Length: 121
Image (tube, rainbow, N blue to C red):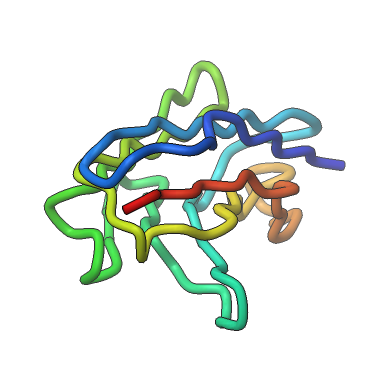
C-alpha cells in the first residue's frame, strides 16, 4: 500500500506564495509520474502540474510561469512552488502518484487527502 501526505496549504493574499509538499511512503519501487491536481468548488478536478520519471514536466496553461513542480527522489517527495497566486487558484490541491511496485509491475495510481489553498483578493 502507498500513502501520500500533503502539506503546505493555507490562506495567502493575492500575489503571495505557497509551497506544497507531498511525501509518499509504502512499498514503492519507483514512480512513473507524480503530480498535483486541484479541485475548486463546483468544478472538476484538473491537472496543475506533473513530472514523469524521466523528468518531463507539463503544466496547466493557467499556472505556467507562476508554478514550479520539482521532486526529491531520495525522499519520495514532490513539491509545488506557487508564486504570484491569484484568487482563482483557490482550491483543494491533491497529490497524485503513479507507482511501480517492482521493475516489472505497476502498483497503481494513488491520491493524497488534499490540502486547501485559499487566495484572498
